[in-house]
Amino acid sequence: METQRSEPCCKVTRVSSDYHIPDIDERLLRQRDKEGSLRELAKYFNKQVLSQALDSATREIIGDADHIYEVLAGEESKRSKKAELRSKLSQNGVDIESVEDDFVSHQTVRNHLHDCLEIDTGRQSTADIDGGRKTIEWAQARSEGVIEQTLERLRSAEEISNAPTEVTQSVRVGCGACGRTYPIADFLDNQGCDCQQ
Image (cartoon, rainbow, N blue to C red; front, side, top):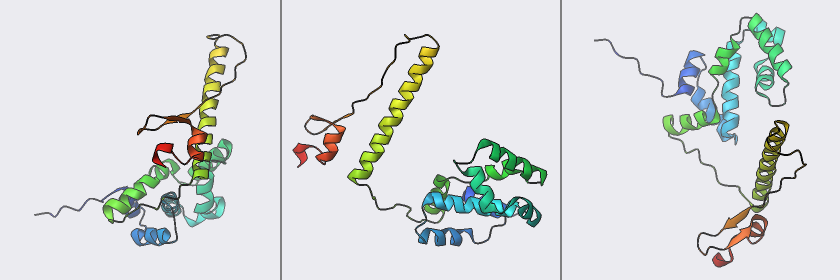
């Protein structure tokens, strides 16, 4: 009777096997022990995949995996630079689209650590009032920007009048215990509702 080959437990295991990346679990754990975040672990893994996909000649012509990955995945990289790099990789026999399909997200890494290696991936919360305030302010500004852009498109399509507009938002927080509401800034300054003090 033919023995069935065991299936890889997840994408991390499958891809590392396909690209012949040895000891990937140990390497990921070492990176994690250096206070590596899940996103940094995903980036580390993806660079290993890319490195295995490149031959020495390609590295000499185009650059190493770190450089190539930062251009392809970097938010600061211009589209033209990414397109030029993809073209060079293709000319040198690298199927970069297939390689990128094998890249993993931080969520995939988390699932691998948690489900396959049974490692707790939780981190202690470092949230504080100042950090929370900045996040809320960013979200509010982003939301106002989206509304302004939507109004501008409607104005251009002559769906609304052409009068200039200014978008402002007032965010309030309601206490589920007593029903009192606060402007978000007051709620944060007060560190919550008075009824819980």
